[in-house]
Image (cartoon, rainbow, N blue to C red; front, side, top):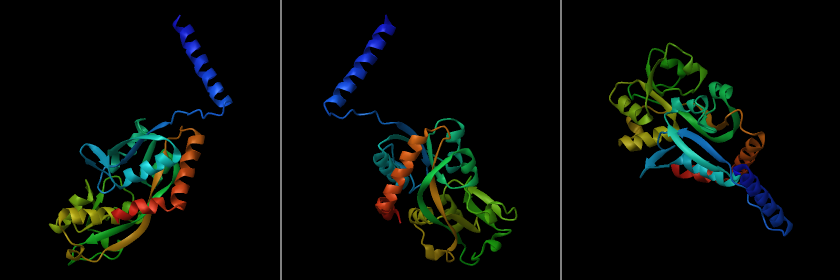
Length: 247
């Protein structure tokens, strides 16, 4: 009996859809719900009254609206982002473009670029990667900045929870230098009540980008929709407008 009623309900729904289409009324398809992992570090994301807000949240909301999808967002430490795919929870992850993510997931498109910068102690300035050898460098666990830094065992890397911790340790003389994005380090300095002038001039290592990655079995049609939406947001200057308040 239950199978009969299920089949009858399905038949009625299909008949209603055909009837609406026949009289020219739109048939609304249910939006796909995508689960998204983003980096839990300000200003990329933080919690305000138990709600996730921030720069990456703003970008993903704009993308969801443009692509006509719904998104459920979770935040976590950078090193845990890739676990979203490996543990089967995430459909999308916003992460640094890097070889590990390229192997684990499908690259959808670039979200935004940033400069990787190093700040160092005033009396021992760093102005070249080669000067980091033998030095204690604070960097986010799991982050990939360049082969010349990540793959050099002579650079003593200290895993920091966030740039806020890094700049405080640098100011206290417990680190020789800190590397992170320009967005994160500028925010961390303001958060700590420190001035850039208290340290040596910044050294720009390179320009990298945060990219949107999708799990490998996400439907191709949905990947194309997300990619097209990203291109539209970029072309219309809407991504740049959302980034401006955080610069």
